[in-house]
Length: 503
Image 1: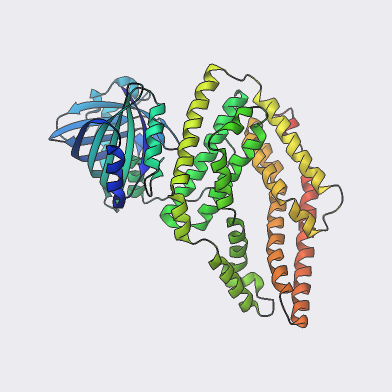
Image 2: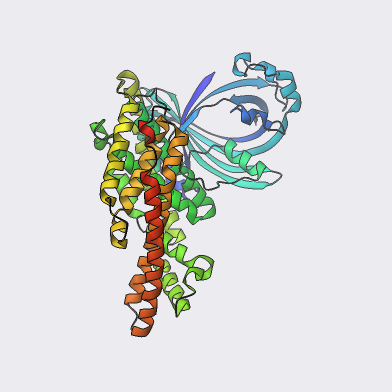
C-alpha cells in the first residue's frame, strides 16, 4: 500500500508556457511524457462508491495496472489517500490480486468482480518532472491534459498535481506557492474520479445550505477548531465549484456564508487559541470578505426583482423602479469579474496557506492536546452570543426598523455560532431552538428590501407619488415588524438546549 500526498490545481492550457517557465526555475532530475488510458469500474448499483472506494485499470506503454483507492481525505487542495496497485494481464480487474484486508467484512470479492462494468474513462497526456527541493525532498509535478468521457458526453481535464515522493511535506506547499502564481490556477479538491462519476450519473454541483459542523462532545477545543475550519473551507470550495460550472448566484450566497462562518469561528476561538490570530491567511480572509461584501446588495435587489418585480407591482411607476434596480445590479461585479477573482493568485494562495496552516495545526494538536472540554467551551460561546443578541433586542416590542436592522449582523453571527458548536449538544433541539430566529432573520431581510424602496421613494420629485410610496412602505413595514415581534416572543420561550440535561 502507498499513501498519496498531493496538491491538485485546476489549470488552463492557455498558460502552459508559464508553467514550463516555473518548472524550469527549479532543479529537476527527470522529465517524461506519457499517454494514459484509464477505465474506472463499478457495479450498476455503485457498490464501490458506497464503500468509499475507487477502482481503475490504467494502460500505459502496453502495460496494465489496476488500482484501488480507499477513503482518504481532502483538505483544501491537499489530497491524502491510501492506494493499492497490482499489475494485471488484460483490461478486466482481478480483485483477488489485492490484499484481502482492504475489503469490508462480508464483501464477496467474486460476486463484486462479476458485477463490475466500465463507468467512465479518462484519456490524457501526462508530462512529469521530478523536482528536487530542500531537505532531501523529491516532488513529482504532473501536468495532465485530456478528457473524461462517458456515454453521457465528455469534459476536459487540465490539472497540475504535486505529489510528495519523499521528504518534507512542507516543501509541497513551497512549490505549490509558485504554481499558485500561474494565471487561472485554482486549488482543486475534486478528483478525476469524482468528476467522472458525476458525468456518468448526470449529476452536478447542486447548491447546499451550510449545516452544523460535525463536532463530537469528546473533542478537545483545538480539535473542534480544526473541524470547524475544515467544515467552512469545504463549504467555500464546494460552492466555488458550483459557481465556476454554473454561474449560479445561489452558489455565491453559500460561498459568502462559508466566509462568514470562518470569520465567526475566529471570534469564537481566538481567546482559547490566541495563536490563531497570527496565522498568515487571516488578512486574506478579511480581503475575501471585503471583496465579496457587495453580494448582500445583489441578493436584496434580486429578491425585489423576483418574478419580474411582482413584489413591487402595487407601487406607482413600478416598471421604472424595476429598471432602476436592474441598473444598480449592472453596476455590481459581473459573472466574469467573479470568475476572475476565484481564479486569482491571491485567492489561490489563500486556500493554499489555509490548507497548510490546518495541516500544521493538526500536527500540533496531536502532540500537545488542549484537553479543555468542547462542551463547556461551546456552552460559554452560546451563552455569550445569545446574551448579546437578547440585550440588543431588549425586552420591549420590536417597533423600529432601524433598530432591528442594526441587529442583523449580530443575529447572523449568533446563528453561525449555533452551526459552529451546536452539534456538541442535541442537534434536534438546536434546530428547534433556531427555527423562530430564522423567521426573524427572514423578516429582517424583508425590512432590508423595504429600506431600498425607502431610498428610491426619497428620490421621487412628485410629492403625491412619494406619499403613495410611503403609505405602501408603512403597511409593509408594520406587517413585517409585527411578524418579527411574534417570532421574537416564540424565540424567547424556547428551551435553551445547551443548558438542557437531555442531550
